[in-house]
Length: 505
Ligand code: NAD
Image (cartoon, rainbow, N blue to C red):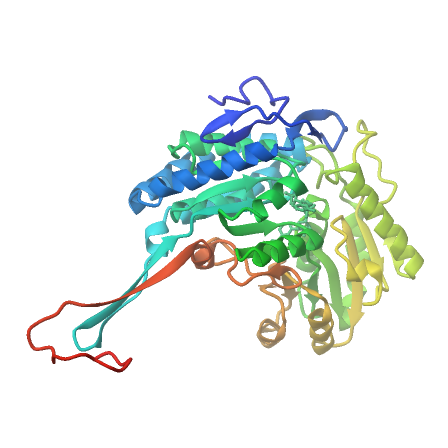
């Protein structure tokens, strides 16, 4: 039975320190609102300096015992955790939908993509395997181990409050680290429930701590000498700040940032599939996905499909999380909605042609929701702000080019490199595209190519700062150090006398 959710949603979000749920002594509390109504659901604390310090001290202390817990025992906690997450899938999705406004089905997807990472973490023993070579010199063997780093931390965004925390703490902890999670202040209830279930799965006290707040709490952790590694997902300016501060403090960091993802539409593609996929990938989750398609690049004759795309986009509408006919939910906050509306205005001023305008979207019964209807611009050029910046709303820019080469050049000049896709019936075009495009995640007739957790989430260029990416083998490398042992067990016929060179003999 949930400690915090058995009587509905908690009014004040607790911290989780030293394995105990703690009411914060914070003087500042952030209201969490239902984005379809503005009703205040609960408040999240801005944890005090002393609370942050206590979380780090507990994580540091717990690391000393946790790192020596046998790997299969750590894996078994993850097995139990994925079992509990599946059992509570709908319940977590309901909490998530209530605080983010996502449709229930989309909320379930958010939880599911996180569960898949926990499944991957169950395999930690294989993932941590080192390498061995026998006889690197006569009677000498060389082998490596991976060992955990210590206290790691994760800072997560509002748009995937289940999936993104689950990208981080299960793998870091399974690898033998302890972890401090600082979730988004805009939807802190989903992570609270995830952590309750982690506790229930048998995670020892202190391996995971949860601190709430914003800039100050993050900065205290980034500047703390005991924090060894920082995982961040969020916007570009904050990502740059986190990466700079963490690396300035000689910590390792992986920072996943904003995006502008293009879908290239070749004229030989199946028109209906293109339209369906553009509508789903462009407007799903109100465009609040880092892998949303925000630019459609129509090559050659495919530009003739724009009217049909407009008709398809006009047939969907946003709505509340439990409205079964809603295609997507509201923007997360009035500020986020106003930012999207300002971009729509800007696009019109810049000379783009707004063929579908969702600015004055009304949803019956929800006059105060942060609604933006599907919006499409044509005649977009690379200099325009609506192309240069991430809008993070249900706004699609359409650009037209004559050749695949032009499409590739356009995308390779865009500062972001998170995801992209090409729709085509030609293997040769697809092969050329996958080879030449400077984007880290490429879909071929797949609009949102988010890799499953046995691969890694591999954004490039302005969408990522760091080198080792999220989940997959790369995350295990990120959360561990490699120790290499060179070993000789003497036998009688080793030549005697000192070896005065650096050569192994
Ligand atoms: P955000 O940058 O506003 O916040 C992210 C986190 O950083 C939150 O926990 C927040 O409390 C914290 N934060 C905010 N300001 C801070 C500051 N000045 N100093 C330190 N910490 C601070 O992002 P958001 O609005 O929550 O999320 C949306 C953004 O995340 C979009 O840009 C989206 O593209 C990006 N995103 C990227 C990926 C990816 O994998 N590349 C995935 C999901 C979301």
